[in-house]
Length: 171
Image (cartoon, rainbow, N blue to C red; front, side, top):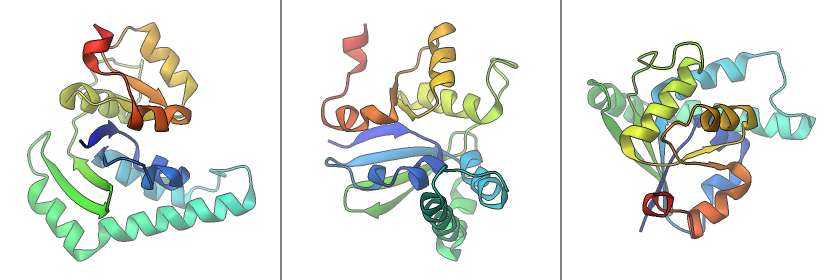
């Protein structure tokens, strides 16, 4: 059975192991996080601490942008992602598919979460899929405000794919 996770597009560039899971995985990616890739690519601030890793991650971001800008992909997204919460899925590897979601930031939490965080949270809630993140401060805020979303730290990705914790286990 395919496991679903909500994730930022840039996480797939930073953590290459996400593209080689042991079990089938579907990543739900809000469109805003795809647009954010341009910002990361053109930013003067380093994404990674190591120069070699920095070059690799920027190359991966470029590759991802090329994929989403490819005429077939962009046309498919343009025609499909019209209504809020519409989706389009791209199988990219034997065990990996990317589902792009037209998420809507409704400012539900005001200043507590930025627009990208809000869209990720709402996508997680809408599709009842856990988040994958590496941001400790965001995880802390999710817990502090008792938001009804499940998340895994990136370091627990293999556990999430292989075993995970079902929503029933949380009740």
